[in-house]
Amino acid sequence: MAVKYSKAKLKKFRISILDKMDEVSNDMDDIKEGLMDRGNPKAGLSQDSVYSVHMADAGTDSFEQEKNFMLMSRESDYYKNLALALERIDKEEFGVCVLCGELIVEERMIEVPNATKCVDCKTKDKLNLK
Image 1 (cartoon, one colour):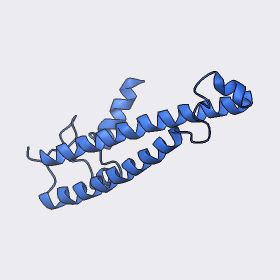
Image 2: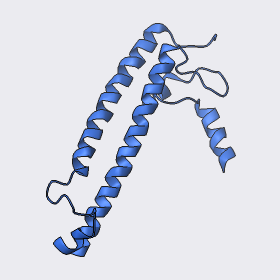
Image 3: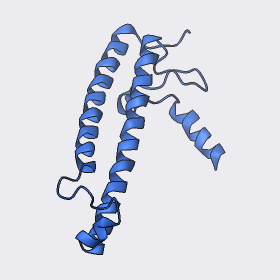
Image 4: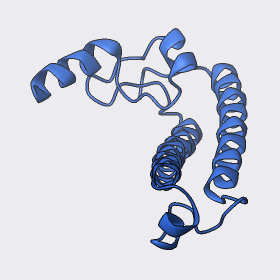
């Protein structure tokens, strides 16, 4: 592969990605705590919650649980994508667009380290999906 980032830049990207993975891991720990409702373990999870609290409160509890599950899923997916980015660094394929083979601009890779497409290809890809 002729187009690739230097080993020094890949090392900087690796450090940045590992920092982001730590942040995501901490966020997932916080979400897990939110999923474990310490006040009323049955709130929002069963019909018992309807009898133990006001129905609106049970609905709010249920909504919060669903929101936390969605956030956990999203963070988990992002963590996995960051891990895949680390694998691409190991293979020295990080920052190379999978569609056109050109180097993705460094600014994009800093902001979106799990990116696999350059902005042009990503835009074309989105337009083709519509």
